[in-house]
Length: 92
Image (cartoon, rainbow, N blue to C red; front, side, top):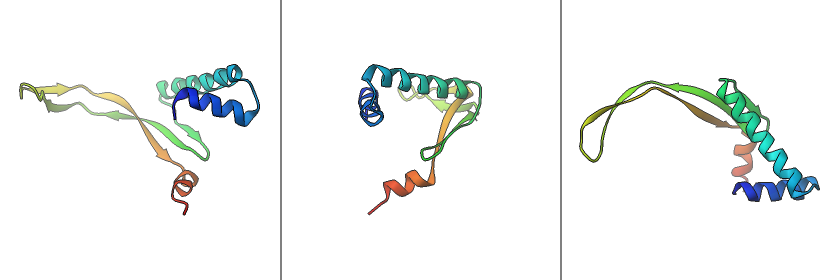
């Protein structure tokens, strides 16, 4: 599903215009990104939990030259699916 499909589906389900749905989806995304950039945990019941994890610096290799390089430390987003999401995916 693309962002535009999500906006269309949101407008349809909520009975609102696509413009209003787009503003709502954009606001939700901005809120999640803002919280994660502050290092906060974002839990959405029925969907899952987004966490920020710190990845340590490590050694790697340039695949083209084979030269060893240092990959810097960085923050990454981790997602853990909610139990209800997992159950919904595995329904028979």
